[in-house]
Length: 120
Image (tube, rainbow, N blue to C red; front, side, top):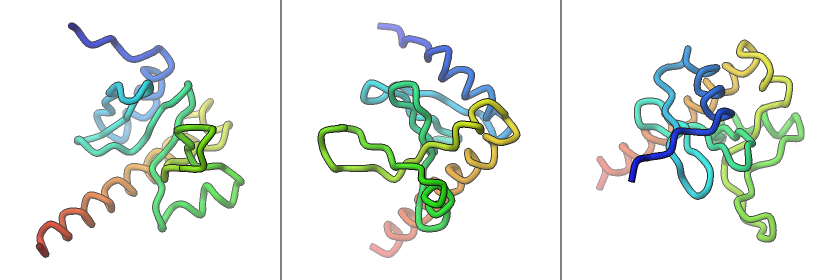
């Protein structure tokens, strides 16, 4: 069965973030994972964009009062993905720093994972 193309919203997000690299959208868990070079740096769930966060960039989201992605609203579990400010969704120049921050968090996570595998 052929893969359905991403929604118009997801396609437009990929286009806005194209200056960072070849942004790919892959369906996952009813939403999409966005990746560059195989590293997932963003999620789209219910037409809401979330960027990967870690100890380095999380404060940028938290200080604006942005809430982490909660995959099941009736459960307290959250993931380390945060939405950018609403204004960033209308302006590529405002969106790119948030996207770059998410991609850098994905790079750090991959490096950490590689170092852990190397030690074992």
